[in-house]
Amino acid sequence: MPSSRQPSYLNALGLLCALGQGKQAVADALFAGDASGMRAEPGWVDDRELTVGAVRGELPELPSGLDQPHSRNNQLLLAAALQIEDDIRAAIARYGAGRVGVVLGTSTSGIHEASQSIAAYVNDGELPAHYHYRQQELGAPASFLADWLGLSGPVYSLSTACTSSARALLSAHRLLQQGLCDAVLCGGVDSLCRLTLNGFSALDAISAERCNPFSANRHGINIGEGAALFVMTKEPVANASSIALLGGGASSDAHHISAPEPTGAGAQAAMRKALASANVAAQEIDYLNLHGTATQHNDAMESLAVQALFPQGVACSSTKPLTGHTLGAAGALEAAFCWLSLSPYNPDGLLPPHLWDGQADPTLPRLPLVDADTRLRRAQGRRLMSNSFAFGGSNLSLIIGDAP
Image (cartoon, rainbow, N blue to C red):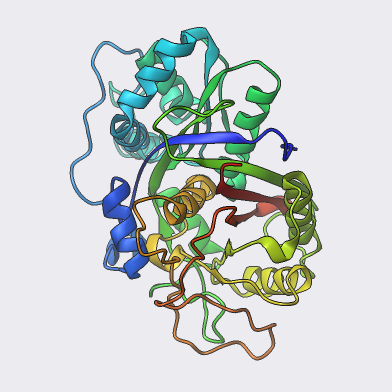
């Protein structure tokens, strides 16, 4: 686990999701609680319209000359990388291509395009000429980014469902602390695809309307897409935002293939490990970004875990009504929301508001959910926690804060 005496510095951030493209656009919509990017669309699941968090607008074409199959997933990743290309190139120039790594989380990779090709095979009896099996490999996003940038440091992807990109940030930290890299491009990317949406629909876990976390009326998740990419370094970089990964903790309770451990013991263990690694007490956390999927079991489990760890309360919210659940990208994207909360892109010190119907579930502990006027204290030493919980009992919590 990360050491409180050795934070990792989050010097640059590129991101896009249903809230918009780029730090300022995302911050403006995030802190305003603007959920207009969540829209009902047909075609993802037969005979149903579903509310999804799609990235709107043009995406960059992939560079020519690379031995990388095309996918929307790689386009989303490239769009995030182009936002911070100067910072990336500066890190490569400073440290060398062999000392810059890539660690990304994903769960879809190019499955959308691959499934279209397989559908063509079923209908026509042959695969399209452009199909290549590498398109759907989970390692494809990290390989693409490294090939585009000419990097020769450690390059890999992680796929642990909804903790994938949170785990990528923790893994990037370890590469730095072990001396294997001087900088790591880390984060996550996932794109909308029919396979994912139909899978969650088959589990009766998906909501046709905007999701409603921690409400008595909650009835499932929305799915979204997006990418978040950080430049993480072991040392601070001049003129960069003084925001750091202060700690992180993981647990694996292996309770069930899809259902969370109902008492929240695994989630609580991850949060406790994060606090210990950052050497902070629970009462020193200023804000908690909840996993908050709006499923019956997740919200029940998480509310129990949070109440047990924060008996005096902590300002918290789920941002999934604003973006949808971006699956493998969710951990990095929500860590990015913590980063934005601490950054100059949030001059009013607002926190991401919790969008719901206000009808609390009387069977659950009542959490102090953030409203539109809740603000982050302005003093130095602010610490924000972000939770990610996944199928199979994979739990991970990160602590982002002002660099010491």
